[in-house]
Image 1 (spheres, rainbow, N blue to C red):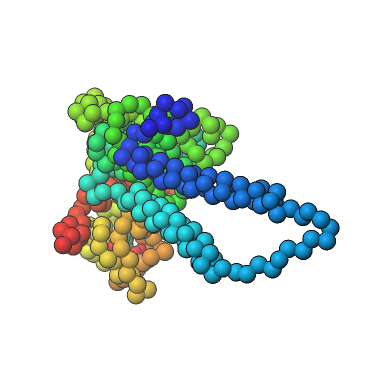
Image 2: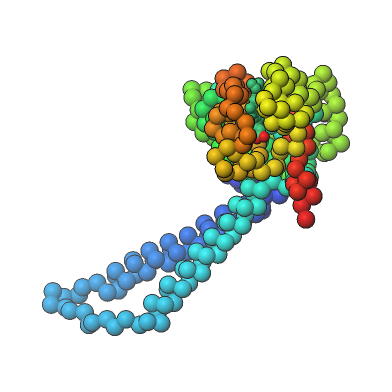
Length: 317
Ligand code: HEC
Ligand SMILES: [Cu+2]
């Protein structure tokens, strides 16, 4: 609708129209009340100004109906904004299960991306139109923020943890990718582009990126190179628990609690193994903090996930 105006970025994802609609609703509501309130203030200032030094206004009696009316109407409007905003927020925070997963790492001052097939890119993100795409984000140094205005998505990238965002592009084209969290002297140069293309073109592009192995294969190789295997075999040993089927399962901890084995848990288990000890095991796993890059962690986690999910995760009923 506002595409001719250079003020507004293109609407290139399924979210864009919805985000804009909410935005314009809020702007329209705010404008309406600003005009109404300031207009009334100015008008009444003139109308009821003091006309003589001895003038005393008559006492005012409260009209309850009016009081209730101007409490209820704002309440309804605020609840509409809240409900609308919250449902859109929840929708935008939950990537569909079948989303294609891209893994990204932000660092001073570039974006590194890897596709499930292994294809890597720097400051570029090729993606198919009409498919949900989830981007799992990690930072190697400071806080960055992954921002694609045309998709109306923005997600902070925080060192020490994963964050994620998703989108479904609804038109082909090239769109800006910005870092929108000040991250050092060359922050303004931390820009890239998203190339949204037809699914067939995306497949063609993937095959043209020869020489890369799938993320899970790199992860498996790292698992061997880092000698995780000495303690983690396919069956549980006195040394370490089997990691098959770990992802998505509830893990019993030595402390008596149980935790869901999601990506955050697996990440923590590798970097700070002593934070959460699996019940029945001794805390002998060394920390890999500082020895595994964010890229490598992504790969190991993808590999561990391919070792199977817990049955209840596989068939949600
Ligand atoms: C010296 C043996 C040893 C090595 C080497 C080792 N681990 Fe562990 N690991 C353990 C033990 C013991 C536990 C269970 C106790 C705990 O939670 O720390 C464990 C727990 C884990 C868990 C949590 C498992 C669960 O069931 O919740 C993960 C994930 C994990 N390790 C991954 C790795 C990866 C990846 C590597 C290689 C980079 C690795 N480990 C290397 C001994 C080891
Ligand atoms: Cu940045």
